[in-house]
Length: 431
Image (cartoon, rainbow, N blue to C red; front, side, top):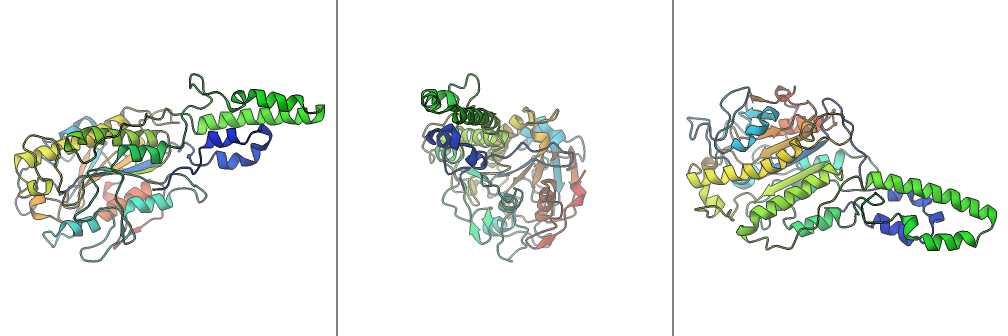
């Protein structure tokens, strides 16, 4: 994952040694952070992909098992059962896609096959392709943008057994699962609130006032006037930097933890989700992926009766696995609630969640059968009103890739009509 800058911007200016040479570097200094996205009806400002491993605990085809613990029962005014109850507080922001399927004519397949299809639009046994999250990261930014494109983090996501769901062509991409490494990668060369009152850091000019005044006193009247003009311009540049870089308080660097210790997993999850939220709210990127484990996950959460996650997924109907899924959705809801309770930057009304599209998914549907039918993916956030929320919509066995084409269109790629092996947006879920 590329850093947002290769240099520390403020330190770079300070090390120039003279205000008169700062202006030619204006474009460089303003790089690495996006301007606040416009608040446009029907347009998402950001996309987030939230992955949970090994499938869901409810079966809805060829008979049913555990009815109502994952899927909402009503088609409007949604209400969620045990495993997805954490979303009841934002039920009016949910677009539930019933019968979203990789292949309605095949019962299921392996975790790796599911991982290859989940975000790529690929059909069974048709190879690999870039996933929607990496494609968005490659296509939604201005051509000259040199900042952070994709925040890709996880917990327990190292050492995949059956691959990952994020692909760049034929290459599998795993997220950073160490919060310290994630913080360094995103925030390590940025300085919060520079030049602002109470930030604890002086203006560049004020910090070098003695050198500046010595230079000024050594100049003749004409050169002194030119320097004064440059100093005024540099003050304006500082104000620009304070807005472009320092309009957010960056979170503190998290402490080092043992990322393999399941007793630390919940704390690590919250740290990672806080990093994602902070980076998105500061507009450092517009695409993020967060992964709990990986397909056929061999780890375990620190819950009563917990053991190997994948083992619990078979038969996938047991109480402990349901506890796992309920807990995993609570972790996702932590981020979603933060977005719901934070105003959209630069907008007169609406929350960050209102201008976000969040795709919640696993690599397979009903866990015990590695189901490829009714896989239980769903969307939270209307994407600026692009999606039909507070609704459960029967999509008639449409491929998940069609829903992801819709996400691309919601993000402003309005002419995008293909992903992997599928074509056409999923218009049934559009508002």
